[in-house]
Amino acid sequence: MDVRLPADLRSAIDAAADGLGQSALAEDARRLSLGYREGQPSSRFVRKREDALAYALSRMPATYAAVTAVLGRLVDARPDFRPRTLLDVGAGPGTASWAALELWPDIDLAAMIENNRDFIRLARDLGLGAPHVALREAEIRAEDLADLRQVFGAYDLTIVSYALTELELPVAQRLIGELLRSTRGYLVLVEPGTTRDHGRLMALRQAAIAAGASVVAPCLHAEPCPLGGGDWCHFTVRLPRSRAHMRLKAATVPFEDEPYSYLVLAPAGAATQSQGGEVGRVLKPPRLGKAAIVFDVCAADGRQRSVEVPSRDKPAFKAAKKTGWGDVLSPARDID
Image (tube, rainbow, N blue to C red; front, side):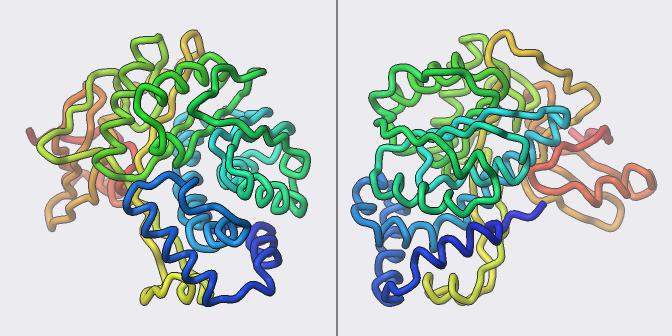
């Protein structure tokens, strides 16, 4: 799956930034990166058009890659899912909407909720050149997620990406409850891959399960998260950097690894599918030895365990060699 920004989007960003000083953009990008690392809300450092463009140039590629990777997990779990309506909550410049339309070009209605006026303007500008009618004609509502009490309408797919981290946990819980009520298909949450954000997602997960929702991914179970002792559920996606991106971020390597945590939820009453036959979700890079590949997994019974696939079992070993961090592991031999 291609996690790079679509060519149309890259061109639109470049056109919007044409004529702006590169040194000023680089300084804005540096300030953005610092703010994100410190956990500051975007409202503190996206205060003008140039700030929004610096975000699009420096952070949008990684955010797009993470959302695309997560939506790919939804495709893996529910290959027959064909959304026609989309709600992008905390949309920023429309990153998740672009990712969703690349995977499901038949989406014919896209709505975004965003409170930052500079992001809203940029999302509209970028959407004008999109190849998808749903993006060109997207409805963008200026609303504060902390005060969002009702979503008008129901959507097949709802995405909240890198937005919950800016909300107090009780506010985020209330928001997720409302979004589950307004989602017909799946609610996708994507957050930074930090211990803090994993813990918050697990609190949201338990509240959603208590309200009757089911977990589609990454968990294959509804039990409490088995991870502890400083460990947390997160994954990474690697994206290539262009030369311009490297210059902007003063980077020395031509790629970037974006860590993320996520949840895919189905609302109460939605049709669910059995996860039968799967051992678990791979939580870390596999360990390859001469005689076997060993996987650390979050198992379908809610336990964390190690699973060994011996090289003598040639069909299973061949399949296991194609299984990576974040994938679902097919049946193999448990070594606990």
